[in-house]
Length: 158
Image (cartoon, rainbow, N blue to C red; front, side, top):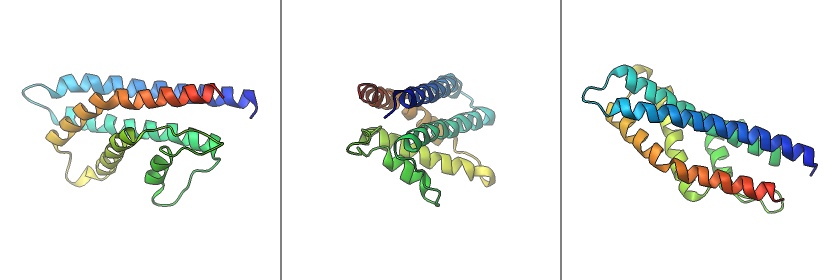
């Protein structure tokens, strides 16, 4: 592999990881707003929007990895799930797995919410479900960031 291409990949990878961190920071702000006595519809919808965007940001990271290492991102109807699945796979001689099974489960839950969010226009979001998911997402973020750091270290050591 050409060192210049790896440097470009790592720059893109780091840039997208920083975007993910910024979305987490916005979600942390919403946690405070969701812990009050009266929760406004706007706060619930904003939180749903940022949870949706969090998964989209992770998916963009996965596309960066898949496009660079495997040179392929499927475009069929199940590609969202397949791309997430692929990030748990160690591809011998090509790349290590990006995600542990624990991170996969965590991100798969957010992926499911993303689908609900996109189709919630007819019935809205459930306040309690959004608050529950937000707390869980924020509790588990370090698990995912640990996996990202481990992957990056392995790639950098190549």
